[in-house]
Image (cartoon, rainbow, N blue to C red):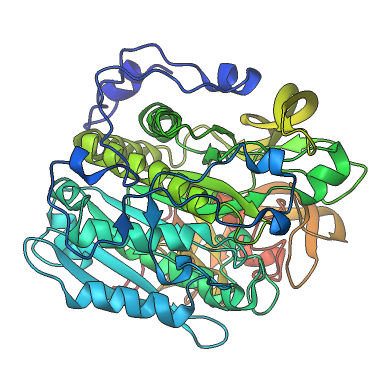
Length: 589
């Protein structure tokens, strides 16, 4: 359906889209990536440029010092040949954080990050206000911090909302062995609160979470203390780390979320393909079933195209994000997955522009760390600039999408499950000995073109039994409206008749997701009929902006659902309400 037709059906019009030609996602996935040309837009110099080129006045003790730092690691310590190392020269600036000090073996500690953020919050001065928030604690009791940076009347969620400026959330180090994002976000927090990027706050609000997984960072491991990959936990919310982020997003409702990661450089790529990863940055927007069309369009045209150009202007290379499984016999490359479980996809279903920025880092220690941080800073600075330039347009898109999704309750069909599309694609890697480009053809699982496997009539909402209180609580943490039934009633509903069941590991594009328990995969048939609704049970309406997130959680026969992951124990505890219910609800809901 065209943008004009959709806009005519809603009270909030969509903004005009860029008129300059842009490559479609299909074209971008099918060809070797090049930095697209963006006309009529000037990205401010990234922080890794001479301060003389920037008109704003920096603070005297900025963490940036313009100078050539040379190669960070002696040749003998490199994880690959000097010819490969020559492909990744250090940037012309030095980024200074505790973890980037010369001679350091470790990156910034949890205590050092906390001290850094406390210092920024303590130096707050108008018009820029900063507040340090303790979002929660990790499994080992380490505080998880966020820094709110704004020029609104205050730093609370109401003040940010009343400012009529979009809020952008920056998240680092969900995986503990991916440090460049945390170091870069420390730099960006300082430059936003009292440095080169502070003028952007006239148009936007920013929340910075440098380290979302402090236990994993301290241990130097990908997962949380109990062995869970928290970036696969944003729908289920089994970990306190994911719960902290969910509550933050629910409270502040950011319009854009940037998730900073690092990817494996050698390891299984050298083993499988006798090649080394080439790109400075791998990028991907949210790609999951029921992702709002116009949020995806904003992500690709307003964010990713300028981001690629900004990276190219700094002689940094970029491509779509991809990975490969841990199976040595599987030579397929896959984009980031389509499951609604990662932060990227869950935040997309919360109607935010949600982007993954991955730099080359896992498995190479501190090698090229200044270049990795420079890549993160350049990419995220571009996202900040886009949010500032497109502030009004983002407001319009969010308002339109929220209304459009809410209006679809009880109407049409909704997709239940979709998978990646197998394609062929040429990917450029590096020869491990010569450092030369090596182009190879790969089987490629694309997340840009999802294949819908299952659809059902879209219900008006879902009923949950009183025994499913854990599911109701998780939904509320996600920001979903959940209503408690005050008086018994009767409704027309589809209940689930079980056809098959198997227990299996929960897979992702890398293999088996790091988790604590196998999942239950069931086959079901919806059965229409009248059901009694008891007092104390729950109703989750779909005439709300997060309706597509509700579908992802409550349709039981998908691998990411609450039922598959045992948050809901009984198929009889959930039903699809197929007509607007005449029920009485508690006032406090």
